[in-house]
Length: 124
Image (cartoon, rainbow, N blue to C red):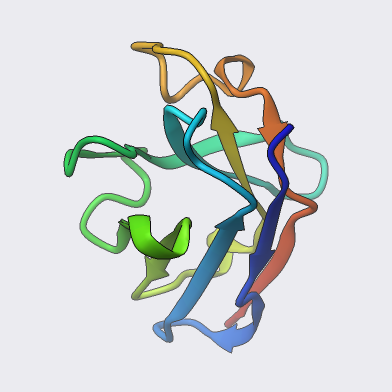
């Protein structure tokens, strides 16, 4: 079992930044970490992902150039730096992890454990 706790959400204006954190209870059996988001009335969608053993990040096209995913192995924590935020970025943001290799880091079905979510709201 892996427990994930997100933090860092809030209310900001368009163009502002937010930094989300996801602390994992343990990572020795964790393969990768992903960030997803879900807006009201919409499906949960992929935002970004990174493997614990790699520095290569993966992003959804909608956030490329604005969001940055990073990890701190010593702290078992993954971050999502969100810059140049837009109202359409408003959503509940979830972090997730899996325990096996997958090439489909952008697929929510690849992840076994999820955090409780943190709300990010961007006003006009």
